[in-house]
Amino acid sequence: MTSSFEQRIVELGIELPKPPKPVASYVATHQLGNLLYISGQLCLAPDGKLVATGSLGDNVSVESGILAARAAAINVVAQAKQALQGLDKIKRVVRLGGFISASPSFAEHARVMNGASDLIVEIFAEQGRHTRSTIGVSSLPLQAAVEVEALFELH
Image (cartoon, rainbow, N blue to C red; front, side, top):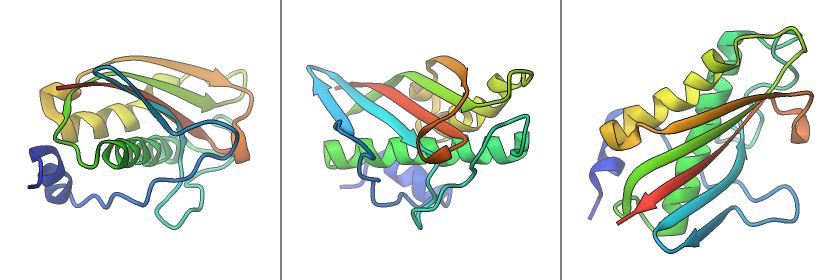
């Protein structure tokens, strides 16, 4: 049986990639009771290449940053689907955390992170409305421009 969230992904024309393996010593997901934590996901495209490398405000445009945040959020959803063997156990998206590699003068972190937030709401509708923090950092693993983590509440 395909969940309504998975059907929505198909309707949106989104292809969930095989979830990326962790790039260091940690696990990608951890379930504790009715909560599923997703470790930070980089902005990897389905081919395994980064959507954007470098820093916003230096060599990465806001538009490229938005696409990178969207790609990272797609990887979050792919990790959730793998961990739960489908998306039908998801009750709601509780929180997203965004890390934006940016120059000290960059000020549009929230706009970039909307790439992830908007994608989550497109897929999960009202159950996708979430709390969020967005933090500018000097660098990210593999020189990724964006990383996104998440917390889901399960049925």
